[in-house]
Length: 582
Image (tube, helix red, strand yellow):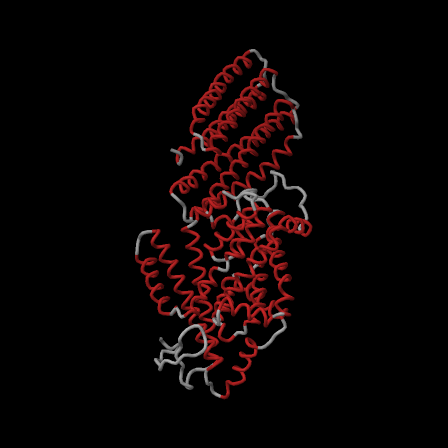
């Protein structure tokens, strides 16, 4: 094995999870070893990041299917949470994803609660794998081979799927290499002979890891450190790397703290989201807090007895003891608290009160969320829902504008302005979201959908502009004390009804991706075009008979023309599905 400073020394077995080579006393000492410890930690964390991201990309569609099968069955929820977190290797990341799903209505709060419990179990998979190094597995050698193979696949092979597999392997290799560097550094600090001038620093390091500390202090340390690195899996991996220098009785409380610290990521991500989304993050914290409280006193009072039990089931390997405790603790707390799912939901509802308002006319997204970008298939589907909501607001504005013109309802102007503000917000927001989505790993069909959605959003925004035009025509007539003739009003009501029908069919075709509705869309659009031609001729006849003034007639003709263009834009929305539906 290669020495950290490049010197090859005679093999000598020292306590820890790997066979290590000691350096001569001329080595750089404790300070440099602490630097290596931090560097190894960085390599391991980056490896976990690379591995998790690429595993998620490979399994993205499967994650969507898993979540799509969610039911109110709590055991199914636990299974889904375990599976998803086992893939992405971070309960914090899974909970952030859940916050996004609840925020956009993909999942109920009760469903999310059971998934959170499963996520805590799934996050123990990494520790179980890393702990195998304590069973005589030469991780460093195989890690080098795995990392090399992964680098070749990821950097030099053009196949996209092989690239992702390569980066997964590279991440795995980096995790074990980082673990090796950390373990070597700790062993040399604790066990090697060092210059006397560094003895105090060595003793301090030993006291920190091997002393008998107050449990609450250890829990706090575990929580703070995990909050900083944002992964309880990584924290447990670090504890495994330090296992040769760490008392098991201390490690268990650090693990309890890590389960609490991992909640910080979801809590931060829930800021500015819906009430239920924030409750999801709170439930994650409550679950881990209650789990910690349940086992805290027994672990403290019967520490030696529990250690004996762990030796019985895990052997003398400190790595296996830490990994198995992590798993047993999370499984145990899930079994205990799963029957109290409704209680956790109730308590979270008391902590996070309902917000007032929340209607469809708010300048906020109801279905899209930045957190969904990590699962592109779900993000694409929810973008469609947001676009359908946008189309509904545009339709309300057209109807309100026609009421102003035909019924003199000036009060409708307030509704139109409010909705137009939301339409502008959605236009900018959805367009930006689509830009972010287009940079993600999309399937061929989803890529075509994203491309077509740009045009659909633009069409809906133009419909909103025509509604504003008609509103302004109405206000002009009201300010001049003028009014349309009864015949003109009847005709506008007739063409507006056809536009409403077209809205119905076209939006359903878009929402349900139903090509069979397109002939009906075509027929209604032709009907509106026919109205436009016929009504223009009728208006000319009314002008000849002096039944309508030129000023009022101008408003009438512009309105009919605007409605005909609205029909064109609605038709575009429906026919956009032909780009990706066969």
